[in-house]
Image (cartoon, rainbow, N blue to C red; front, top):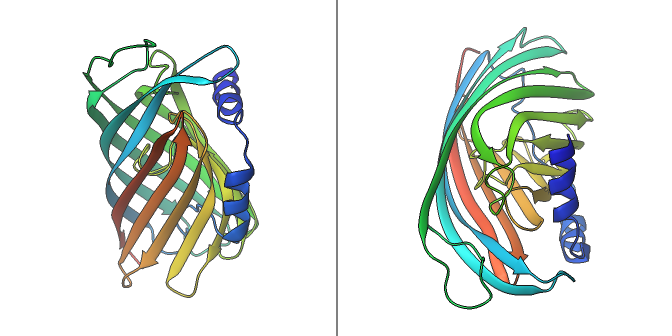
Length: 259
């Protein structure tokens, strides 16, 4: 928990008014777990790309040098819902993925370009959640070395989870960590915001994301129901650190078995 608090504190240091204005303008929206009464088994595959910044700062927080690194990541997810037709559900899930930056750069020197290097990591994340009509809570374990921040590769996140308040089929608030798919291009390690149904075939999330990226960013996620079996997910993140863009774009397809 100390690691989680540390990365959130770091992300919250810059002024938040730009992101909060964006946040208010697009409410109500939010990340959501899949509607647990839709089917017993769902599987999904995802892919995305983005850019993360490494910033060397002075003692007063002023950016001295900034390096940018592009990346790609992929992931897969499967969930099994017990008693999907009841008002409360137990959801058993598993996520896994792979992240890679073939030309990563770190801002380690005040002068001169940073040396390029290849970085990658993979992870496996079994999880369990309780989902009710008015709220939900989930927890999982992350196997693999998932760094808390791009510049802090030695520290890693080892748990995932979420807390939801409100009806998942209406406007609700949710905070999650380690649950985005893909993990980094899908939004980052931590996010909080509001979700809502945008019509009969679409749900959305708008909020703030932090973790792995140097600074907090604006996150938008959308799920569109294509037919009775197939959904598609689209996510984008917009942020800025040390004068450099930090953001991502990702998408995925989900197939539902059963009812």
